[in-house]
Structures are given as structure tokens and as C-alpha cells.
Image 1: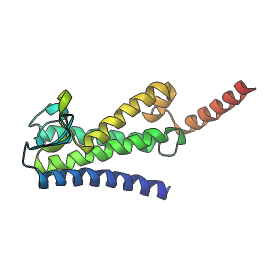
Image 2: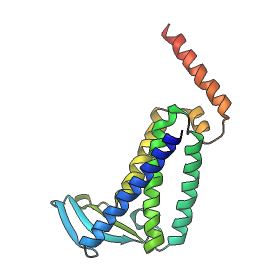
Image 3: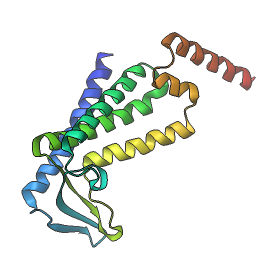
Image 4: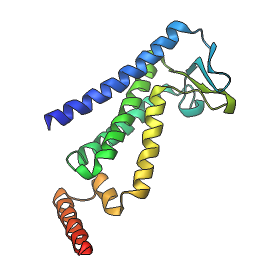
Length: 185
């Protein structure tokens, strides 16, 4: 258990470190709004300051965004604790760590700078500029949605949301195994 906790914390720290390092590199090597092409006009690095959330929404509402991020962080942490010792939810646990790591990376920017540093730009489709933390959050949320659609059922949602007691969970897992072995015969 201590090893799992250590690895979870280490992953979050690593994600935050990568996020902050990439932003530091951009600040040190780019002027504000400067662009440098990585792949023609397809993928461009550009340094911008985003005082809002995704796509610049809620611009200038730093306190609101910090409060919202903190609430989401607490809710995700509670879900993580609920599914901590259930191997069935390992993919969700890993995704939650990426979401938490990304959220912390952007929260550090908001607290320290009052804006988030974004720099990755798919110019050919004029996609909003984003950063490493945004990738962690977005891809993990997409994967969680796909897991909810294709892997988990209503009982699993109840477990994750704390609407089912652990004893009932263990009983359900045992019944699922028994039903699965009966179907094979």
C-alpha cells in the first residue's frame, strides 16, 4: 500500500515537473506571442498567457477558476480514495492521477502568475493554444469517458461515487466471477 501511494505521488510530481519545465523553457526562449514552427504551419510553438480556462473562457476570473479547480481536485481525490484498493478500477485511478497532475500544473500558474502559460498550437486548424497540463487533463478525461461507456456499468459508477458500501462491492465482484465461470461451463 505504501508503494502504491508513493508511486501515485511520484507520478503527480513528475507530471507537474514536466508541465512547469516546459513552461519555463518557453518563457526563457520566447517573447510573448512569438511563434516558432515545429512542423510547417501545422504544429507551432507560441507563447501566450491565458487568464481564463479552456479556449479563454472565464477570462480574468482567476479566483473563480482556482476555487473550481480546488473543488474538482477534492472530488477527484475522493473518487480516487474510494477505488484505491479495487484492481478493476486501475485504469480510472491512473487517469485521475493525470487529471490531478494537470490541474495542479495549471493551478500553480494561476496562483503564481494570475494566468496560465500556453504554447502548443495546431495552427493549420486554428485550434486554441494549450500546454502539457491541458494534454494530461483532456486525454485522461476522454479515456475515462470511454471507459465509462465501454468497460464499466451502473454498479461501477455507484462504487466510484460512493453510493455502494465496500462489503457490497466485494460481494458483487464474487458474484460476477461465479456468474462468469457458470457461463463458461
